[in-house]
Length: 313
Image (cartoon, rainbow, N blue to C red; front, top):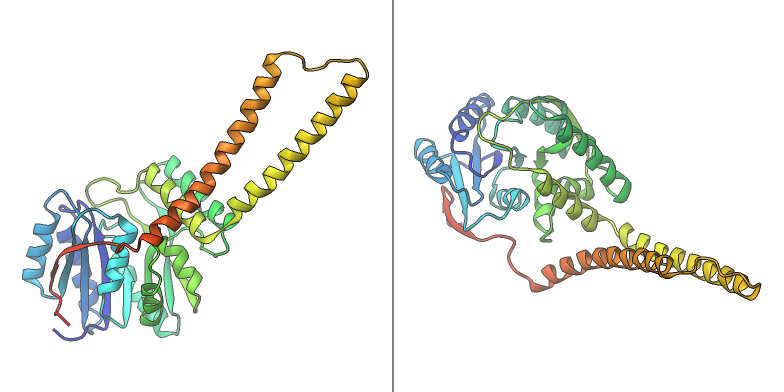
């Protein structure tokens, strides 16, 4: 196979219905560029016929390569595997559900040829998404911007073009709890955005329900900010100061012959308040410790059951 100039990386989880149309559109767009390309499909432990469809697509076009995970590892690790296996000078990360239109890729490549190392897609419209999803997405970006030291553009998802130099830097970052958008911003380089209208899903259902979005936000915050730990530290001193002040006031009132806040109810309320606060901050510390533990174990980020369309080299 000719060394590809462009690599398209597409994670796929239960996308049996979507993959044929997705590959057709990718082929139509990329053939129009007149340069060699490859499509790296990462099957993230799908439970439907996604792998069979991917095999068939490779048989029809050898430029379609497949990385088959041994189990489901999640979207961010599927993107990571795609970056590891991509061979092009330019890598475009795009979801295989056709919400991000492949027709935007030539515009991204044009910006890359102008000298930009990262070209990210900015969603001007988000078709077919509920008000709750839109609200939580905006809240997510504002929260990440406020708590971390990386600048992630509003409405920018994982749909992006990466220069080979950026890909190599990302491949050297092997932390287990990954947030590709923040990692891409963290490495630096010249970056710009391209606006597009995001479509509704071609088929199937969303693979990012609220609990996965919450986990992604938690990974982003703990991976790029120590602010929660510092807030716990400051809150501890604040509560200690309030406690000393209340104790001093009660002592003065007791010496003056008064007995305010008498009874078990007030004592129980204060104990619950302090105990709940301590547990919250212990949970924050536990989140950071669990990430340290995961890194220390040194396990691989993912395991691959089969590779299709790649040379042994």
